[in-house]
Image (cartoon, rainbow, N blue to C red):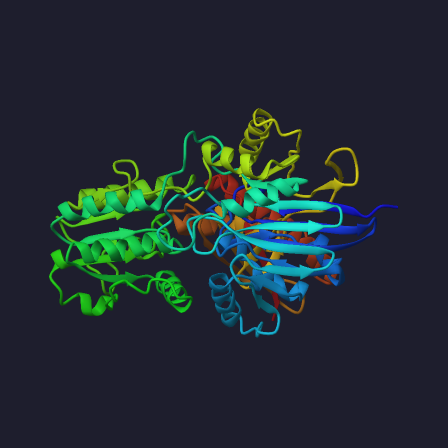
Length: 552
């Protein structure tokens, strides 16, 4: 029986974010595995109390003795954000280039986990031998330092996993895309290419950071007062552009926000940003005249606790903004964030502050490949099969159509959990399904999507909370009036509501004799139904209801 070469996405296929991919090789039922990336996505308002969501690693957790390592392509949160949360369940080696490794160490330090012996640093364009897999890192360009594609070689053939990438002819910081090596890999023969699909609907090229810098300098040269730039902290090229433009326009620069400081420190540690001016502390910046200051801050997506939101609401302790100043949003508006961002823009404009965004000026380029970039990659690699990942279903289907236009013989459309047999066989195809799903980080605990805590909190957020406490005498009679308390119910006549609720409780309890545990349980169930019905009649809400019976 021939060895099988398998691919299985557990996250990031059929969605943007939360990337987790598995490659398997070996005899059926006894494969060795490597994991590529282990990312998160961010929760929205529909899941109250939850910030992070990551893929359920249950499938590979059951096979962890055959998991040879986690190979990380780059340091964006949707590719590394779950590593410190899920690694304790997997306990394997982690492979990353220097910049990514610095940020990984920081994540583990925050969780008080010493990962020194398990974190292996790979040089740029370096190799990792994880027999039967030989993994080679290929330098690409993206919106973060040290993005890598992976050449994954097995006895059955070679796969190129692109990770996130674009073709930036002048990336400003970090190396150019290693197109020479990509062509060589293509000439050697590529069984399949696992490829980024984010911008498959966008014509032309995704553009260069050098063009953004040119335009940013023009804009900042005409602005006369304080300038605040907000951008993704992880985009070190954009950070360097802010430093460059500040220096060219005779201004000082200050970094605002924890992640901005963290990324700056990591970049400096790895030998980047060496020729830039030194940033000054925001507290010192208060003493410098406003026309001589640039602030580079977090919160470009209107995050409630981001620096930009706090500055705009005048609650930031160190940065003050006033009429005549300018805010440059040097970032993309991520779908889903429009409402809160436009609210932020409107507030700033209302206060007499100039707002400059990608809608009005060329101040941002994407880190993902547009169609012309994709054509370049297809021409270099010449894969027999393309498996689109890193996209919603609409992106993946469009990418399949694009692959057909590019004459790729075997494009394969997947979603999370699909197991693709790359070899042996006449052509790659989906042949099995692995269990897949999502885990929510609820406080500091991983819970499943349908967990009781999530259900209860959704119920509380939609319907409010009602608590009834009844005191019972030793003879089984109700002592005094019940204690009624509630939260989140639209009640204006509180006394009227409480009196009505007391009457309802009295009517219900009259039919019970509280001599046994079973009678108590039956009473609790009956009271829950009666109280929720009364609340529904009065308010239209059926609150989450808790009944306490206290014996006195």
